[in-house]
Amino acid sequence: YQILFKQCVGTEDVFFGMSRKDPSTACCEDMVIKIKLPETKYSDIALDIQEKVLDLRTPQKKLLLHLPYRVDSKNGKARFLSEEETLEVTLRISRMFDFINFL
Image (cartoon, rainbow, N blue to C red; front, side, top):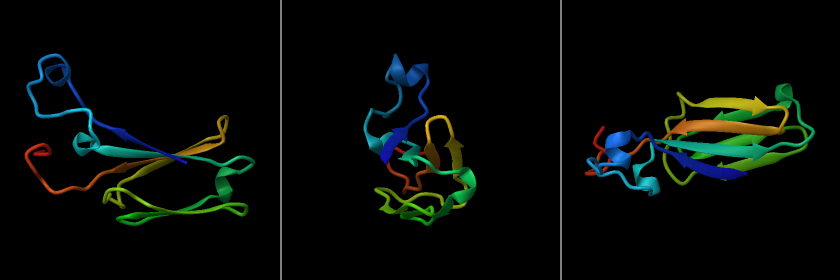
């Protein structure tokens, strides 16, 4: 599996530096988990997301992943890319408001 982070930035962030955002994970809004599942059908996947845990089960594989940040477990998205044999799960990071994350 692979954990990636996404953040929404505009021209004011990239070119002018008007916000306090930087490339660190502290400024990211979403976490994307890509899980390789060779020889697996979409119908065989059972996925359960909790606040700090991702639980994935197929007939051949099991993954219990403790997430690095708390996530909104009710509003995530998952899609299975059959050509790549990869499950892509996008989760919104839930964090306390601070001087960086004020939205």
